[in-house]
Length: 360
Image 1 (cartoon, rainbow, N blue to C red):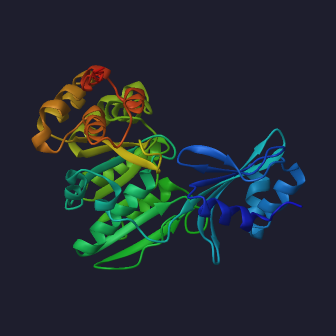
Image 2 (image 1 turned 45 degrees about the horizontal axis):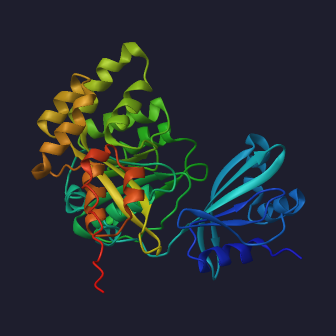
């Protein structure tokens, strides 16, 4: 007899997993340290999966799912924890993925970031982007930055989320968390209205469309600190993505805005540890120095990596420098370092193994 969804969520957490996947005709699976682990031997029937998902939804959420065939929502399970759920259709069947959100909002110092990320929390205006592939810890880094800002200065932090993940308490800052669907109809209108709500810091969970990007740039231009995420693997591709969203005739204006307001891009990925105990954070940080702003303005993005390499004292570092540091500390294997680096020539050569002489 199959378990109910609460049992599967609980077992995912007990295994140290980050996500639970429920799919038709497949066993329920937990993602543990980047790999899938089956929680049962047998697959689940479509009706069983659908029933488990429906049990987690309210009436309004069921209506939304029926109308749009997609749903993002937050799920709080008493005695288990908080999850970000995504329901979707696959070949006519309901399926879902649930991301575990830890109760404790992480401190930046515990995540493995270099000191420059904590220093960004003192900025008063501009745009900071946290980027990476799905599951690379972008939301966790964003939460850590919000916590640092709230504990270190007075002001109003306004977040626009889909759905709300980490729940913040007021500290030195008032933190107003608005959720798409329940508190607002869309990111563009919420972001436009945010400018009239006296915020010091605006957090957008994701820059997902042209209008949201445009208003976020305007907010950063008008003296607000704007934090957001983007699904891009590194700093140069982040700039490319932001600009290419716009029609060709609007790109020069967007490039000029972006070069003026961009304070930093923090790109990150999680790499399996050499000892097999979880994953470790590797990052790339591009700060908005004079040279980098010029490169963006002139669309010479191929020069960005070189500028990051020679401006370490300004807080910049490349993903290869971060990976090299992890490799030197023996936190990751050389195989993983080669897989994740941008240019393997930046990694140290492997040390030759010396054979012990035999005496007889």
